Image 1 (cartoon, rainbow, N blue to C red):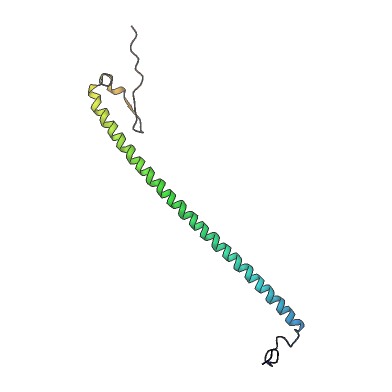
Image 2: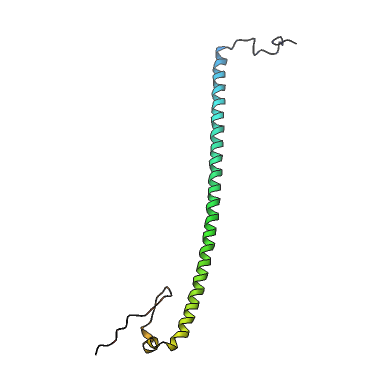
Amino acid sequence: MAQGSDSNDTSFTRSPSPGSKQDSSDDVKKVIRREKNRIAAQKSRMRQTQKADSLHLESENLEKENAALRKEVQRLTEEAKHLSTVLSNHEPFCSALSSQPSEILYSPHGAFHQPHITSPRF
């Protein structure tokens, strides 16, 4: 069968009417618009994926930092307990503390402060 001899195939034999030119340009515009929309959707999905990946990495980093900070808090709490025990054991032997125990100030941060004591001048 030769090309163009099919009576049902009218795509090459008829010339487009003026109304079909409008339809054809509308079809081309639709195809272009769909292609642009497809590309925009693809870019949007890519940005969304990148943002999710970025948030996941940030979350992992914050979890690691949080774990390190909790470990440091635990270490500092143990150190404060140890130093408090050392101080409690030392107080009975310390002449400066035993003569004026009310002069020791305890800060809300757990640090100990002894005000400067001047010796009386004679």
